[in-house]
Image 1 (cartoon, each protein chain N blue to C red):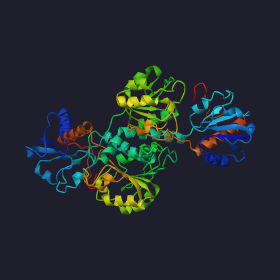
Image 2: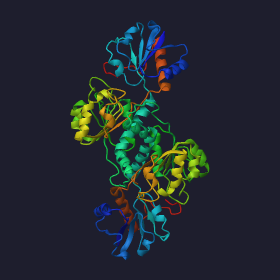
Image 3: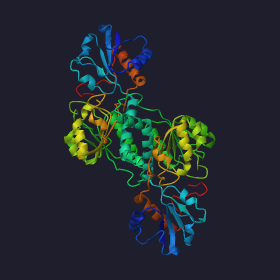
Image 4: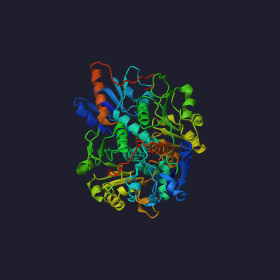
Length: 306
Length: 306
């Protein structure tokens, strides 16, 4: 039996090194050069070509290379009987939170304004801080951690999500209270999972309900955002700016208007990158549990979508 | 009796408004137009002209307009019998900490690199984070808060200061262990009070002991830093960059080389600005205590310098 790594465009070597160290007996295949597909019992996936898993008749476990699984669930050809697991990694949370806090603080402390003033040699001490109230869409492990850190730093935070959370620690709103949620915030962070409910949720209809000059931070998935609507919302002043780490097409095409928009700050999907040293042991542990017929860890609920 | 506001170049109106609301009976004079100097019993100072306080024969209380008092203590003509008090304001701590955390995160997440890549339309996902260990020089109320916040966010922090702190919560070093302190850090934050011990402490001798490419953040006082030495240390690679909020001369002169140095990020002394709404009640409270002959709050220890 073997583990197949299927992550087109990503270097598998760091992973192979970790797997070899942790489980020397585990044989590893790397897509697209799979020598013995009938021996593949486990796959480790990132953005796999749709339908390809049917090549492995003895597949027993599907493991995502990251926290997100939308790239797996969109492949409707995967039999419902094969369990899907994902990576839950403290380092992912550390990175995501610190990226988001950086984005919030750069808005709050007007980094762009001071950079421009430095270039123009302008000494302007007026209004050094913008008051912010931060709205977090998606209050799972990542969203909750972002709220905890920002709250500890002294910022007001409110949450939004699709499930009821009667005991949630911060003010929290569900879908029917979207307006009320947006009314309170001037920094909007998207950390939602990508599901049919949340795809395209960041659209003109939502932006029009925002307080004028709200700042948007999208670190979830490119498909949460209707990109043309963002350009329009920035132009019309519903939003004052955006920090984006994810895009509908990645790498972002060279002719994409985001590159040159001065109100958009971009990073190339690096907010939170799975760390092989933290993630590989989780994959190996689930392989062990499959063999021993024990309950898996970090199993994805397909109907919920994460 | 009256309170004299002496803060050349700063608008006193916001302060007058607060004092009038809190203590309608208190008469207020504003330097340089002091009508009855013999009636001035309290002064509220920021960067006052040296020697000027001798014009007030009945002076009973000197209050700084901020947390720092170096601008008062350098005036050796002030009689030792007059108490000096300063402002201690949670909002000052909030602002200072969030400024410093912003500077740390922008180094950690390489904001400058990604800004440049965006301008050049480069999609580069490699090495998204720099590992950081943060050294805080000065672990008073502000320094300790910075350490608490960074520690809570998952960063290793170590402290440096001039007093022994046997029960300090984080690794802590005094003057004779400066080398050991610097060996551990690649982000160096100066939050020291300005005293004869600390003036010019950020000099070539210290920079040469730093790990290569250490990042410097100075939010304390301009006089902590030997500015020519910073330029040289950046050139020679002892430091990779610096974020500065304070300067030896403020406003920074137009011909100063910092403005155009690409490794220096500048703000115009706005990291933490005294908030009249929080500070005025403290001044009024100390005036009340003087009248009632009670112990003052936030008294400065002149020999310690803060």
